[in-house]
Image 1 (cartoon, helix red, strand yellow):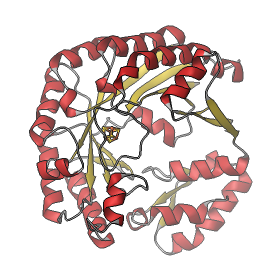
Image 2: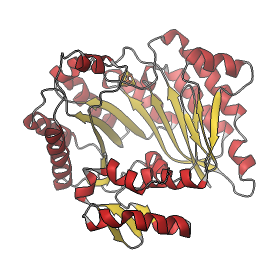
Image 3: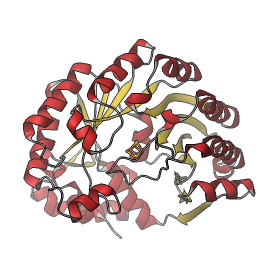
Length: 377
Ligand code: SF4
């Protein structure tokens, strides 16, 4: 059995105004946090083996995300990767590390490449200095362009960039310019999301107080259409609602979330999934560190019943180009899915091909509604 490992590094130099992820600027906790991470890895070394004793379980992918993993010292990054290799049987095809453009240096890339990192996910967001300043990113557009070049020159050629669209007052021309700049860099992978106004974030407050105006739905849909058309015209495969890649460069780790592969999540706020249960660690670094120090796991879990498992398959696999493989469903769930899909198939939002139920282009624009029509719970 193949599994993935996710490591959460909840530290950032500063907080971006839209961010709803768990992270802190208290970087003096980094090394104590990494000590706890390594202990958690050792404490859970038998977790999958004890559940599946007849099935040798190897780690196929590692994803070091955050927060900002590139704020860690190279020594701490080495301790994390070396402990994974020591504690878990690895046949790792992909080790991804998230980085912020302003952290990228030739020395950092060379060190992580030597440790086995073979994919970098770069938080670019936009190539507009004005929009970067508005969302309080620390880098500017020139640094993002330079970071891509530095990563390549230092020997890692599998690069993903994150982009966002739908900023307040952003026009379709602005978004086309961002896409054109991205295409000039020819990253292997592009993830693109519309800006979200998550409750509790400073961005949400600006909206609530009438200081900014949210981009209207029609413009956001036009931006999404532009994204799909521009990237597919330039050779990118649209393999998941928000993800595009050059041929052969799908994100293997992220794909495992969409195809029901187990993963172990380490660190504060990290989630895990072992096909039977879902668990999540406490979203507080001090509590995380202190609980691990006491030899306990700081997590809660829930058992996944059949209905929940079916819903999970719908909300993950349906996001992919291939859609839901109906052969993976038990007969009663397959029948339920087909019955529930009928009106959306008739309406041109879903299509059924080779036993796969998938979103049409029209369905991509209303994917949340289509998925909820198929769900059980
Ligand atoms: S760097 Fe990333 S994780 Fe940190 S605050 Fe900004 S968006 Fe959030």
